[in-house]
Length: 194
Length: 77
Image 1 (cartoon, chains in turn green, purple):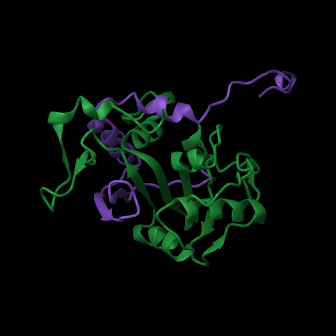
Image 2 (cartoon, chains in turn orange, red; image 1 turned 45 degrees about the horizontal axis):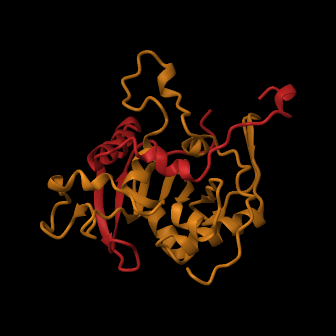
């Protein structure tokens, strides 16, 4: 991670991937507008606020209609490369062929334009800063979604509490994930982003 | 966006906002609950929450949420 002095150019923000795209739009939610909705989410903020509270970085894999979309949001990436705007790589794959999705016109509303330079740059960032260092490793995550559709979120570089341990305790009970509630005051402290 | 306003300044999110926004959750449990809620709203019937060891990461492991909900793509609307 230390060897990177170059800043990756901010060309990644021009995509229109409707569903997944809206995930990174802060405050965008269709759920609030249907009155009979019994959904919990209202404000389109849960994933960003929740994931960024738990860890510094996350990568999301989602599968629908045999298309796999990745969403990568990493504070480590921004910090290492001194980027002040939020950049969010979002490559799309045809899961039966393993190839990137080609240009597609979705009912004339929005067009997803495949750009090999953009795709390669996105993959370069993801393979460098995510826990998955090869494209095979990355695809293994999509294949963990064995249902016809679903979502996998990987949260990493977890927050630590003051004693240097992770807030989540996975050692005490091998079959459970525990939160140390005695330390809950400390859990709010954040030393990474000063 | 109406074309006539294109020339005006627009607010944008800075990197620091990612942290600012996460302080909505003082207690970790609420943050975890957000992700569980998302799976429920996606009509998932199964949600697996598990960890994997990876010594190259801070904390030595990563945390995973895997659901069989509706998933997302870019052509929903």
